[in-house]
Figure (cartoon, rainbow, N blue to C red):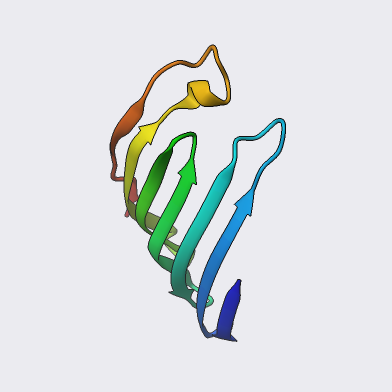
Length: 98
């Protein structure tokens, strides 16, 4: 993880991974910036369950609270971790609260 700046304006990046018996292996890569009122992740990439979740998200907690995102799911296979949850999930999510 790397971060520069103060709470009034910062840049951040994170590359991390995790694994365990009860959780699927996961690798996270993100880049963003923010301040006391919002965070903007210009790069979000999560590799897990044989696939990838990628996109961009923004959350603003100044009144009124709002967020938006553009998130792509590609070949997420929950059955790799939970055999009863067969399937392959792909698609685009556009969450918004403006």
